[in-house]
Length: 211
Image 1 (cartoon, one colour):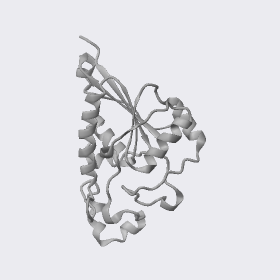
Image 2 (cartoon, helix red, strand yellow):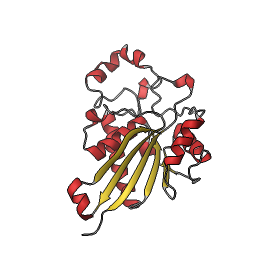
Image 3 (tube, one colour):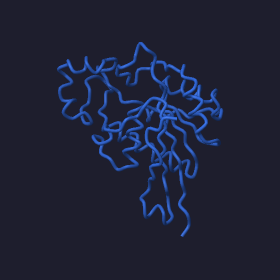
Image 4 (cartoon, one colour):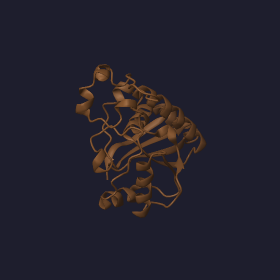
């Protein structure tokens, strides 16, 4: 039997947001990244493959992170823009600290069922909905770029959702995963071949690796 086709996903969480937004729910607000940790960028850039498909979200902090990675030694390419991998839309909770969220009457259900609770406000979504949109797009892009490396600079929420796909986790279980800024999560998709049949379609190479 032939060897499986392996599509390697290199998920990177963007650099920390600038100080004014630290410890707040940035969500889909377009805040800037703090790209001052040049040593961290250089170490991460050395780990990344050449000849990869690069993807960022439409949000500034992922675009800036990808740009600085290329300046630090990663391959210089023009990334594809993928809004489906954006952070969770927090609606009226955007900009709140966790302490402020704890004081809001409209957030009481969140503490009981954080994966399924949709914040108030237009276009807000639950984490379960994030997992659903991320899963669909991963399947599509894996098929479109089968056998290649895909470097995706994304967000804590979307990377947890990607790990949930690979590990077969529920959205609630995926919320237990830590995703640090500038960490690397490696998920390989296997299509066809005996190895894929034995081990399923995904192989987890590393979660939340700090380079």
